[in-house]
Length: 269
Image (tube, rainbow, N blue to C red; front, side, top):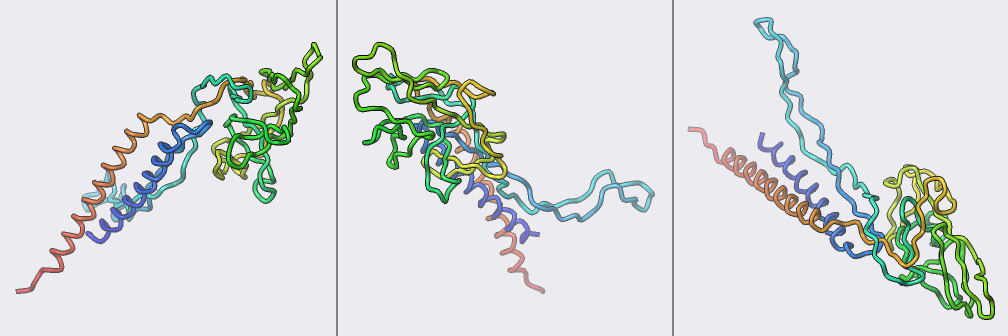
């Protein structure tokens, strides 16, 4: 019936509108360091079972197929794509890239994610206390906290996360700390809280903390940033497909409306 078509087309419009929102967010963050693109996963809704397959007819033959009418579509969820973004050389001493698996740990509010957020963005800088913090409007502190003395002339960070500084009057560099990385069993199950930050959930599992290069964790590359893994061409193709799907559902909605209008105009003679 046309009433079913109306409802079905409406679910398609709603699902494609959500898909458009996700694509727009991906494109908006195509230049955000360490950003991970999302995709929308769809699933069909329940079906009206009008005739069962395999039922015998009057001739004793079994129906090879059934008769089912679907009731539309819904958004099953958004799935994060954790493929590594391209490496961008910056030359800045506190720009860090994780080459492989892992997240930097930064301090967040205590009532969110137990006070620790996780990010792939490595655009760090120093605050007024010499602490290494994210170069964002919030200035999240790196965990464990690393303080660089005012008189340090250089900062060197090795691939295994060892932070060394050169002090005036000393020949050998001084090791001040080691950057630790966190890994998760299911990255896609993490919660997104904005600011390029993630927190664990029951789906992601608990973080495994350790040094870079150990137990599958990636290595740290100083002077590089991980770019967004958004592929603008792929997103633009997805945008076109979403627009067309939206148009098709709009046409189905219009066709169902016209059918109902014709039915309502029927007169008995």
